[in-house]
Length: 160
Image 1 (cartoon, helix red, strand yellow):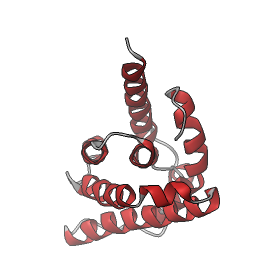
Image 2 (cartoon, helix red, strand yellow):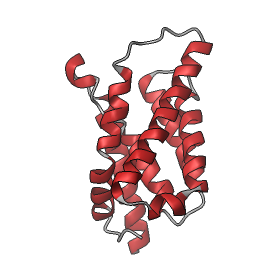
Image 3 (spheres, rainbow, N blue to C red):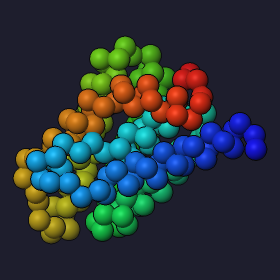
Image 4 (cartoon, rainbow, N blue to C red):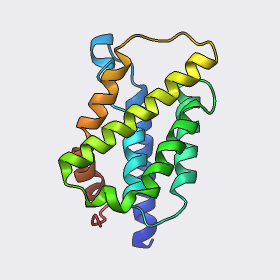
């Protein structure tokens, strides 16, 4: 197998692990701090992948997350696609930021993703949850830099 195929298989395996980590049942105290692992992986791919098909991957990852969690089909897919489009449009600027500024940008994008899901939940009449849903957004933003360190080492690819 070529090195590129191995990288893609490792990235796929990391996506499966991220999906499973997002679905493991946890007590409420820990569940509110659960980061959105799949979204962090998708954002990393959008920022650092050479492929232009990352928007399609973001859409498919969102659909897979919707099916896995039993939420409205397309809810997370739309949110993933919107923020992936924004990141892909400004990826050179975001990559040039120092780590603290990059975390702030990622936090703003994660808030935008959560607001999109919140809006869709409100429009479809689903019950709106309480303020604890924002803690997972903060936990995801805190894990952005460790994710940027870990993902390229897992797939054995140097970060650009």
